[in-house]
Amino acid sequence: MKRDDSLPAQTTEATEAQVRDAFAAAAGTITAGDLPPRPAPARNSRSSRAVWSLRAWAPRARIRALVPVAAAASVTAIAVTGAVVVPGLLNGAPGGAEANPAAPPRFFAGLTVDPAATGTGGVVTVVKIYRSGNGKPVPGATLTVPASQQIQSVSRLGDDRTFVAAAYDRKACITHFTKFSVSAAGQIQRATPLSVPSISGDVEQLASSADGKVLGFFLSACKPGLQVVAIHLATGQISRWRNASVGGSPSLTADGSVLGFISGRTTDFRKTFAWTIRTDSPAGPLFKHARKVLSLPANVDDAILSPSGAQIYAETQVTSGRGPLVVNLYRTSTGSLIRPVVRLSSGGQQLSLAALTLDRDARHLLAYGFSGGSLVKAFDLRTGRHFSLSVPNLAIDGGLSTLAW
Image 1: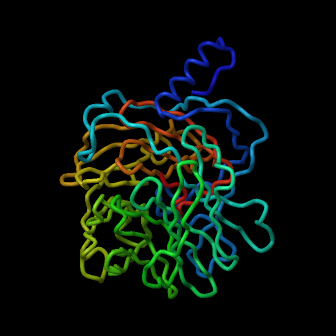
Image 2: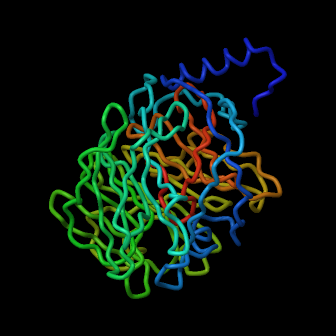
């Protein structure tokens, strides 16, 4: 629910204090996004969102756009979001994580459009570091790449102060990975090329294991074709699987042994499911080795494996894309429902899908990519506390990994 300015000041201050305590971060004023809703996808699935718009300089037919979020015209205080956390959420810890609540990471990384540099030459993207407590960018904490490249995705790499960004060089048709860390003050430091074999093609959605040893991603090859790829960083081993259909939402178990993703089995992608594949599986057709773990009446729009891989968080929107947008927790062994987790939106006429990212221990969740563009919803999965952040100029697109926590 939105903040009601008619309430007594004491009530409002108490509510905001509760949010600050829950996330152990200082809350302040934030900027509200002011952007018309983005176009709705033709179908209610993440795989269809991957193809709904145009990135002008993309080198192939299956192209995407970056949607910058405009700076706010007004300043508001933090508002408790209208999302609903289901009672019973605190009963147990997913994936074997510790049950004691803990503060989230102090910062998250966000793929952001640089309005000052974006112009006739195309969209320019950077990675900025934001404070988890209020969504404000840390001054000066910006990762840039050479003008010939465009940053496509960002992911945590191991601990919550280390990240990796994937940047695509269109002319060379090569993706470069940059590893960087964040200081206690939120400043980017030690940004260096990640030591991996050269990756030919455009790395799009990107995930990494909690131990920092495996990367998993969807790759648009230089020649037409989509691949799912896992890189074992310690050995340089690359596993590639050809994918006959559009998909996305990669995630990895904590040890990187299993990669999760969503996809339809065929190119018409009328229905999307959650799948897993072992990262040591032989190369070849993806669905020869992948296992379907979740088949629901509605599309699976986003999915994230728990650290152990025993459970999977799945986002769905029921009633032909008009119903509530919900996240539930399921067993990967049977596909059975463990419990509802959170309702992200109430649904309605305007389609509103979201991408999800968990922190390292699966204790906290960020949801982003709603029709409002700048809106980011933060959830404490143990206490049920949740609030909204406004993060201007995020690069929102169904085919990119925009936020990393």
